[in-house]
Image (tube, rainbow, N blue to C red; front, side, top):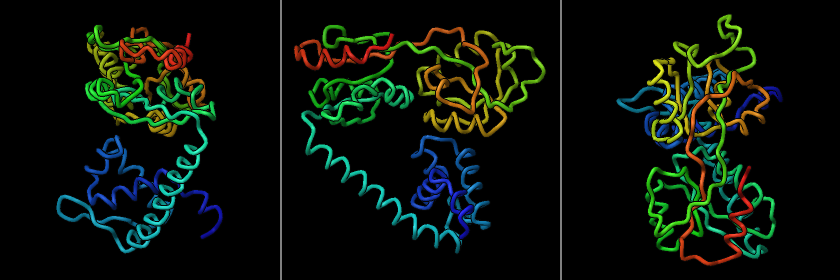
Length: 297
């Protein structure tokens, strides 16, 4: 394989292929990856273009590997087994030297990149180890009450048990309309919310609380964008929007770091703040000071 062909092999596409091959189903693989089936099919198609070969064939309600797919799957099993081993060994090595390992839950309804953005200061502290399980708000609350977590980060729900939990507001992100730098918006001098009707839209899933806020805003204002896909992974949302003629809605802190996207303006909506939830009876001053240090103004 030529060097330029090697450089064209996208590791994300290769991992998507590996998951589909392991599941034997595009539907099951899409659910596991947290993306839509059309998006997954498109990414597999790009990998097939690189290898100039079909990698799957239809088989009943699922898919089976083609001859070329069998060859590639043999290698991806080794590749991703090695990656998992590498991550385990690095984490194990790091945990041997850290002073404290914190167990911090992340809500599945919250874009992961926002949680990692808030935890950046902890990542930068080489004396701390982190375990970051992802669950629903209800499951995280249950784990915290069992003291199996130190705290968790989630959007603040309309109601929560104030007798049991302290909710420390960390960050209230502003969201911007975002689209690729080469996307032709249609001649409008500026992007308005009303101009989103009919435009191709890559969104977060319906279980994402922020997306529910967007959906409510669109419905209330009679705005009907043309949904072309969804993912709860901000990196996927950003990459898809940059590579295709569509728009998305992203937190400004994420958009600022996405060189291939530009802002079409602020979405004039109020989204729930991201909060750290601790047990009210947890009087660990070190932990509370650490959480206070995560607050972003």
